[in-house]
Every structure is written in structure tokens, then in C-alpha cells.
Image (cartoon, rainbow, N blue to C red; front, side):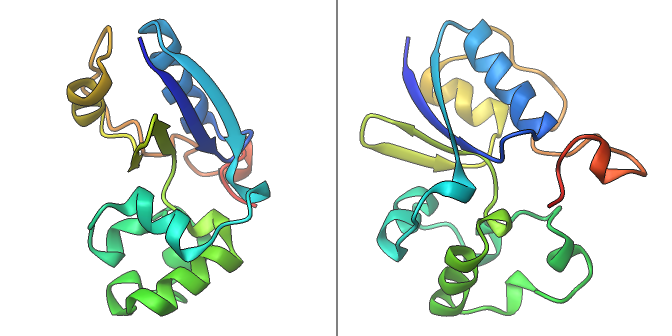
Amino acid sequence: MATITFFEKTGCSGNARQKALLAASGHRVQARDLRHTPWSNLALLKFFGGLPVAQWFNRAAPAIKSGEIVPEELDEPTALALLRDNPLLIRRPLLQVGEERRVGFDATAVHAWIGLKDVPDENLEACRHGADPRACGCTP
């Protein structure tokens, strides 16, 4: 099984579900808070692996939900500056196994990459906080 460096927002219930699934699948999870990591452009780009800029962003972030930031309208340098300055805008989790890095938690893709005991049908990137986002710790 794999040793996974898992960059999360500590306290996020969605990240907790993802880590539990990885651990139940026999993987070793080394959690790191992405808010306390000094991100460079190069470090971030290694996780994004050629994805379009809009897919780099956490769609649950208040600035995105409000329309203050529209990821589809950003060029790469502007997007990277925003992500470095406010890591909560980064789509979570960031995953690293060895030298390979990924962003987000598509269970089917994670299963194909490192294997999962069970592949749930639900979207594990979606927050389940309902009406009160503070209830799960998903918002700052």
C-alpha cells in the first residue's frame, strides 16, 4: 500500500472522510495543513498536472461562491498568485505518493492510481455541511 502526503484543511469533514477511506484501504496517510505550507508556483503546478486553471480552485470557497473570484476568467499567473496568497482557494486535497501528485478526490481516479478497498458512489469532494458551513469547518 501507499504512503500518501495529504494536504488538507485541518477540521474539514470532507477531508476527514477522504483520509478515512484511504486508511481503510490500507494506505498510510500523512496529513499536512495546506494553510501552513509555503507554496511556490512550481510546487502548486506539480499538483495540477496540466489541468485547466478553473479546476485548481475549491468551488466551496466563499470568494468563488459569491462570484468575487471567477476561476474560468483567470490566467495562470493570476490564479497562482491567488492560490499562494489564500490557500483555502486551492481545491482539496492535494495528494502526493512518491513523486506523483494529484489534486482533488475523484474516488474512481484515486482507485485507479493507488487502489481503494471500496469506491463510493458519492462525490467525496462535495461538502455536506448543508445550511451551516461552520458546522463542518469547511469555511474560514
